Each structure stands twice: as structure tokens, then as C-alpha cells.
Amino acid sequence: MGKEKKDNEKTKPVEKLIRFAKSSAVLFSDYERNSYAEIFIKGHKEIYPINSILFRDWLLSKFYYETHTAPSNSALDEALKTISAVAQYDGEKKEVYLRVAQPEENKIYIDLCNDDWQVIEVSMHGWKVIDDSPVPFVRTENMKAFNKPISNGNINLLLKHFNINKDDLPLLVGWLIMSLQAGSGAYPVLILNGNAGTGKTTASRMLRRLVDPNKIEIASKPKIEDLRVMGSRYHLFSFDNLSGISPSFSDSICKFATGDNQSVRKLYTTNDELTISIKKPCLMNGIDEIAKRGDLVSRSVKLNLNKIHHRKTERQVWDDFIKDTPSILGALMDGLVSVIRHLHTISIDDVSRMADFCQIATAASNAYEWDEKLFMDRYKANIKNTYIDSMESSQFGNAIMNMFEKKIYFKGTPMKLLEEIEDMGYVSDKVIRSQSWVTTSKGVVSQLDRLSGSMEIIGIEYEKSRDRTNKTIIRLERYDREFEEIIEKSA
View: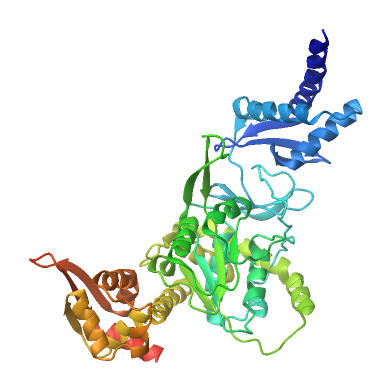
């Protein structure tokens, strides 16, 4: 009898906790088998993961209000497991969003992350702040609230706070617009370059405020395995003061900008898998050339920041920016409305792999009365300049450019190409003696493969084949007009 009585005493709190959850919350799960509760608090609804501290505390408060006692930890843990199972098997399946949602082509929702759980609704009819979100947003503890946008915003205020060339404004606006939607296209990676004193870190923090305000505004380069965790907690990746990135880090950023699905173990002690789907916008800054690999170059927008000549105190800088933020956000919302209205009327040619970005950024231009060709003209020039910078930042790429200032054509083995580069003085003796200089046929081919996109852009055609003895043969041919124009400009 004693054991039965103890079991009943344990069961009662568990049953009450489950009953409170089922009667006071709407339980549901997402398509990745995560469980959630929709709770009504102070006249609005909030979404909590069932395994979160917030839901745990809410359930404890409900229990205490009804019983004036506290359940044991074991009873609470048992109840939470059951509530999670009920959410998965009895509740509705829903897509759950973080900061930005686009459940249908013509509707965008942006979580303001304020205490009232309001969202911005953007449609072809305009934008407005609404109290009851039709889609479930979940929040993490570091997410911060947007300033509410205002009507009749001014997009040119961006030039007041970001010391970019005026001609680059459509590129910055295009990146911001793309980052504030969640359609099917890949996100471009924004790279801010500049010498010391150009305000790269402050600019990055401000951009974070406009897309995904967070207590952790900008981070140092993380380990690659930590990117998945960051992607599940932030809408925007933002990295500060990068002095060069590894090929694996560059590849990971490209995957997350395009969309990446990863299966990981839930716990080290189980065989259950958790699928994490991540597609996020990203911004990075640094003094050195960051985008060196072709995949990242083709997915990036690089903006060079000018030196700041008129210094303000940090407080003045941020007071001015925060004052203008509602107007800037209002103008960005107008751009999103324009995207929804005009996207299907926009036809883009020659856009490589970033077609969706180019189409969206061009459609947004209608909101600012810009010429429809303005964005594409600036984007094509930006991509070409980024490829040139990538070529010049590579020892081997710079040697190839030096070589083809004088030559039009080369055909031969990789080692013959290397010998000609070294013997004809297209690279310095200091570089040849360095550990990073290529010394093998495989190394030459690897460098050429990596630089193929850049060479094509600047007017050097690259072809690789096999001869009768199965040796690799390299053919490089220069297109005079394109190459000479680029050499002239870079000089």
C-alpha cells in the first residue's frame, strides 16, 4: 500500500501538469519533430518550444497558481516528455519561423520581437504592423526588438550612416531587401572591405540592427561545426575582422547562403537524428581580401568603405542612427512591397547563379524611382571587380595576370606553365621561395581550377585536356579587349 500511495502522489502532479498544458495552450510540432506550445498571455499569443526554460517556467506558474505547491523535478520532467509527445502526435504540424517568414509568395512577415509579439505584414497592398501573427514565430533569448518602421521612409538616409560610394547604394539596398525576405532564392553574402578607420565594425553592427537585432551583434569567426548552432538561433550570420578564411569555411558560408540540410545526432547517447535546415543571409568584414574562392566570389556583394574624416563620439553615431532607423526601415518595407508587386514583370539577363537576388533587387528599385537597369549595372561591375581583386590577391593568379599582359596564348603541360612563369619573371624570387608557392603539376591545375571563374571574367579562357600519353595539357588564351580594359583600370 505504501508504494501504491507514493505512485499516486507522483502521478497526480504529472496529470495536473499535462492537463494544464492541454487546456491552456495549443500544442503542435514542426516538420522536424520539434514540439511547441502556443500560449495566450496578456491579450496576445506567444510561441515557446516545449523543451525551453520559458515553457517550463510558464507551466510551473500555472501549477503553483492552481495548487499553491511546486511539483518535484521528476514529475515535471515526466510531464514535459508527455506534453512533447502529445504535441507531436496529436497536435497540428506547422512551419515555425525565426524573425522572417514567407509562407506564400505574396506575403512576408517580420517579427518585431517586441513585448506585444507584433509582426510586420507585407503584401502587394502595402505593409502594416499587426498584433496577431498568422504564422508561428519562435524567439531565442538574445533576439532584440526592431524599432517600428514609419511611413514615407527615406532610403537615402543609408548614405548618412554608411560611408560607401553613392553609386553602391543600390547594392546595399538590394542586400538588405533580400535579407528581409525568405523566398526560394539564395542569399548574397555581403563583404565590407576597408582599411583601419573606415568603421567596418560599426557598419556591420548597424546592418545587423536593420535585419536581425541581437544582443550579440557581431562575432569573431567561429569553428565550422558551430555554424549550424548559430544558424538555428540567428536569422543573420555576421562576422567581424576576418583576416582570411579557409576553403572549408568559405564553402560552409556558400552552403548556408544557398540552403543546407544537415542530419546530426540528437544526443551522443542515442541514435536519433535531427535534421537542421539552414538558409541565412550573411555579412562579413575585414581589411584583407576575404572572397578568394570562385564560389564565394560569385555569391557575394563587396562594398569598400571610405575613410571617416569627420569623427563623432560613439554615442552620437548611435543616437543619430537609431533616430533614423524607423525611416530607413519604412523605406525598406516599401521596397519589399514593390518586390511583391513587380517581381513577375522583371526580366533579368546574364545573372549567373544569383538570378533571384538580381530579380528581387531590381523589383525593389521601383519603390525608389531608380532606373530599372541601375541595380544590374552596378551589380555586374561589382562582381567583375570582386573577381579581379580575387585574382590579384592570389600569388598564382597575379602571376597569370602578369604573364598575359605580354602573352596571348599558352599551351602545354602544367609544369611547363610553371617553368615559364618562374623563368620569365612573372613572379618574384621571394614568392617562388615561399612555402605557399605551387611546386607540382597537381598544384598548378588546382590553382587554375580555382581561378577559372576569375580568369573567364577578366578575359582569359582556360581549357584542360589530355594528350595521347594521358598527360594533362593546359590551354590559356587571352581575349584582348576585355583583358586590356581590366588591366588599364586596375593600373
